[in-house]
Amino acid sequence: MRPMSYGTMAVDWEQRVDFTRLREERLARVQRMLKESSMGALLCFDNHNIRYITATHIGTWAMDKLARFTLLPQDDAPLLWDFGSAARHHQLYCPWLGERSRAGISTMRGSMPGDRAVDVARKIRVELEERGLLGEPLGVDAIELPVLFALQAEGITVVDGQALMQEARKLKTHDEITLINMSCMMVDAAYEELYRTMRPGVRESECVGVVSKVLYDLGSEYVEGVNAISGERCNPHPHLFSDRNLRPGDPAYFDIIHSYMGYKTCYYRTFAIGSASPALVDAYKRCRDLLDTALSMIKPGVTTAEVVKIWPRAEEFGFPNEEAAFALQFGHGVGLSHWEKPVFSRLVSLDHPEVIEEGMVFALETFWPATDGWSAARIEEQLVVTADGCEILTRFPAEELLVAGSHYYTAAGALPTTRDIQSNLNVYLDGLNGASSGNGTVAHGPVRDGIVAGAQSAAS
Image 1 (cartoon, rainbow, N blue to C red):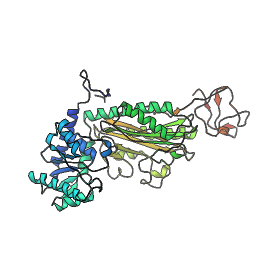
Image 2: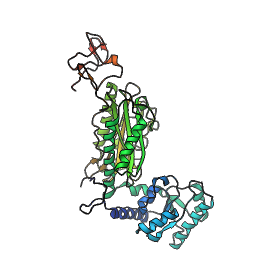
Image 3: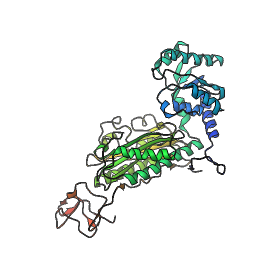
Image 4: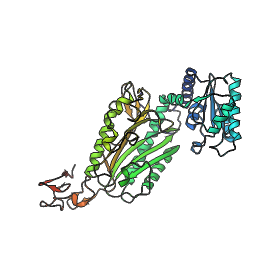
């Protein structure tokens, strides 16, 4: 069954996302993997892991605090410690937790006194002792050093639990795939509004505002980030937005990262403002070809190493090594976190290949710098792996470079949308750089040996 996208309301006349099933299947998967591990229990401070295990959420403001924590013992249900009022709320409105939701706070990234760490460790020791698990290794996903030291002082052996959670979250359930697809649907709409908005003079920061409004209006839970990069900022890729104004002929690419019911997107698109230079058009074609070649390989059984081998080495597009070019020709899992397993990169995948499996959801993204030295193209598609291939979830058109902003007209007709930003390189008259030929054909570039470089019909 292909991924579905629904309205965001609950209805009685259509089966949509089954949140009870979502909650139960996620927890069962972690419990099964914990049972198969050497760990006696799993302690999580990362809010994404807490949500996966307990189906609780108290707002994105809490994401970087490491304040809340959940303990999942072997053969048992999870316990959750949270802000007191939130813990009471969970007791009332999260019946799957009930009295297992308790008041308790860690050190809030060191802003609280050190005895908070001791309190956390004692709470965990009590629960492990009651279940005969104190002598078993305790897996932890992310931890502050004072809490680590306090756990060790209580005689608890702490081991890596993050790897288990990454493995548990690697394959998505039916309801997770539906939520990710709906999250992508919202970004489709954001790109549509962005395409209609962009024109010379609009700032990158205004573009971020347009995207954010569309997403929040549609029901986004959190706009984690919008990279908005234009003009000379496109190469090298800075991975953030600024207050730069769009100009005619600019390249502009965007990455939209947000979550719906916790499930993220990572979704790049590249545009040209008013017109595109031949150099940008060529870069876009190369970027798209790298992406399409990789997408054509995706199916169960293929490894990440096989995919990245078809991507160019860092030295082939202007970087000294793979670490310097990291995340430009790239792929990564997407779920409750923006980055999950599997990872596709020449930096790591050749030596540490991962096998692609049905039910994985990940994004593949490519980059190519233009020959003009400052333009570049960036494209990304998010997909779900099916039994015999993959289905792309990101639907805003990207097969060819889109031109946004005003379409200009001259006395002879439409101004071509492929043209150099330097006007003297776009026209040809009587053997010299000059004006339009008047028949709808414009010659691009200077005359060399009687031939004009890059001639193109305005009708095309």
